[in-house]
Image 1 (cartoon, rainbow, N blue to C red):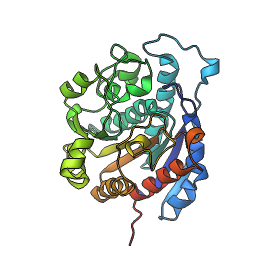
Image 2: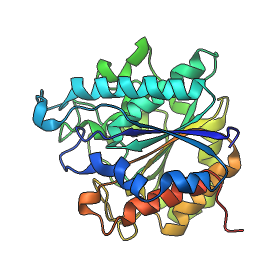
Image 3: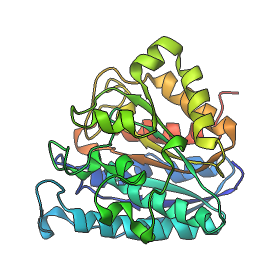
Image 4: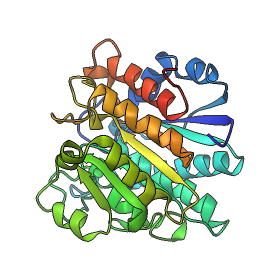
Length: 304
């Protein structure tokens, strides 16, 4: 990394989906010795704790097509401010989710920081799902299936226009890697958005190295660097069982590490988030431990 300081920020949000438990993801990753393991790589690590989030029991669910929208928007605003503060202090924001709705805030904060410098940012989104639904197409109304759409300007204005502008990332600088489960009405959004989607078939046919080379180029082309949004359901459930919405046929253990190592080698990553770790359905914290391993690879750990 170009910076030597990391700012860890927890976002224990679980309003974006039905399955409870991802709010414990930040704690699970800290229990897996995230902080000490990062220090062992030579980084100065500052854990800024968790941002405040609303609890489902204390918040009205709201419209069925965009459940908990005001509460999620407020959480994303708080997270965006925290990310912006860290990035402006030349620290690498490392965000711990929570469900994938938090990406709206993390990317807004990073985008705004570089927009002030008249620069743009790219995005690598590693996920089993496209996360490009809108309230009009979502079969569930769960906002964790909408954040990528929001980041490129599609979706509720409360999320697309944080800080008064949209999109936060140009679609041409977005690479979606590992997708294998797309809703029927969501697919036209993906195809028509300008986002480059690499499905598991692309990875099967071309190999992960070729796909990641292209994804890094897409996210880096004309930008100051990119944000990495890693949903742990990118990895096959045999390796990462404790995730919010598991889908068979995902990346292998070594493929996931290779992707992180290539991202590190690029020197272009500006910030990173890991989301959808659910200790409630995990096996002795396996998924959180793997998440920490992958963070380590993305930040410089090598075999030799």
